[in-house]
Length: 110
Image (cartoon, rainbow, N blue to C red; front, side):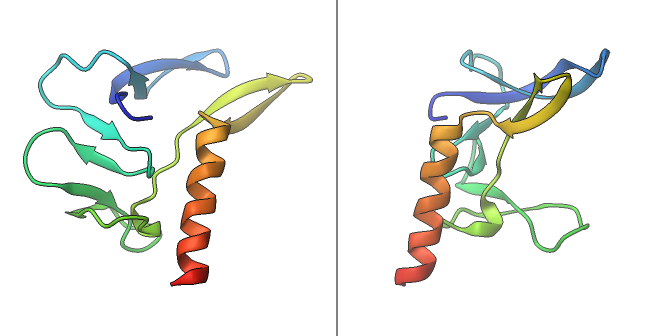
């Protein structure tokens, strides 16, 4: 994910165009999110703050980034069609597995 940016965009889902966030390699606009290799969403400008989930079913917060912080881990998926059904998968399965292993090892060995 390093070097990719998250910006507002649209995707086709269930034959309808939906407004959502999209990943782009073009980061030439003012104001955008960066999705780090640790799975954190950090704003391009200003201090090192990340999107943080404080509690389920509550709005996310914006707090200082902490390495391998589970509450700051943001996963992005994409829908794929398999055997006529929509299946949600991580955007990059290899990177997702690497992040999950790092978080798990940090929790087990710290």
